[in-house]
Length: 279
Ligand code: NDP
Image (cartoon, rainbow, N blue to C red; front, side):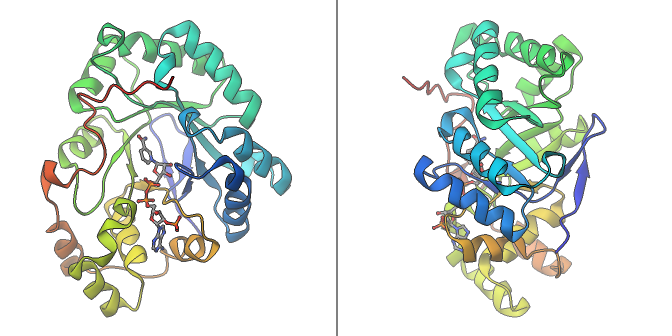
């Protein structure tokens, strides 16, 4: 199975499918990542707040796969938005993970740090300029947050990683991303499993001879988004990887589009008010 690449607005390429390791316990992470690499995944999405970067780094080193064949994303801890703190946090990530392809501001936190996520964005631009990370982007940025950092710095993120799944299509953000030529990364692409028993999804799974997870992930990739479903289980990692050898037709795509519940479909926090900072 060949995973397509998406070209980002800084000229670099990212595999459209990866594996996410949110809520993978540190003790399980190295195994999950090495299973994923054996299945064929070459893109891993972690974060400082997931507490498992060291284990991701260990699995990468143990795999023997050339680092240039891998794509690794991590994200700034909500507690380290001030530029000096961000610098120290990045150094720790580099130590644990090795080279970082993509570094994201995890949450905009507009109600914290005097709402100054622009200063944080400028810090990331410095890290990129110094060659400490290859690309920089954001996560959970609403259209007005994107507008602000772009207007104030002229630097456009390569990706915006936001909640997207059939129950929450997040179209306003996807449209803003597209207008700025920012690639959308869809987090919780199967809504942490919630969409897999939906009758529309299960009917399309029967029609195509695929699983509900494969149908849902296929819907995302046909919309052009980047996905990294999480699984602790090797068979499900394998299943989630096999989504590039079938197509949903326009009627099937439209039926899944029809599941969108707007704001009510959101499973995670609203970025306008989310203010969690780890102790
Ligand atoms: P997902 O939508 O990927 O769903 C994961 C859940 O679905 C797990 O419970 C998993 O169980 C189950 N699952 C996975 N594959 C299958 C399958 N084929 N059949 C049945 N069940 C399945 O949720 P996540 O929230 O983990 O999102 C994916 C990634 O997105 C994260 O790991 C993280 O990298 C990123 N993310 C980013 C956020 C951000 O703020 N930037 C927020 C949330 C997520 P099991 O493990 O038992 O297989």
